[in-house]
Image (spheres, rainbow, N blue to C red):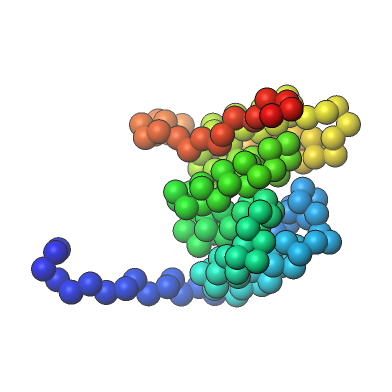
Length: 182
């Protein structure tokens, strides 16, 4: 109501949260011995305590110091999804896109974008992204198995759900993979 005085929404009160799937898999996909890993580890400690806003703020601080770090952009996208109770927001989508633009040949940004979509219930788009990653991956890529496991888990999740009509709203899209040499 425009005539009513505005009030800030209080942050959600949360108890201790388990590690996110991002936290459990990020070192395998993104690495563990760089500055981004330090920022992401610190952010995850806030998230585990239920302070998801501070977790996102920590990553934003890391991005102010390292604006071209794709791992931090992926981490920000994930942190925003966690802060939004598992749902993709435009800000989270933008963070994943920024990571994909910076690291065009790295599978991490698209993999974690798919993970965030799957966690929010957008299984079809997550599957499309992961199948594209598998199709583009070299046969010896270590991350192939991780993606194949996610695809299997997706299928199991589908068999456990009752069919729900597809949403009519446009689905979030990652930018297409850039052409080789571009």
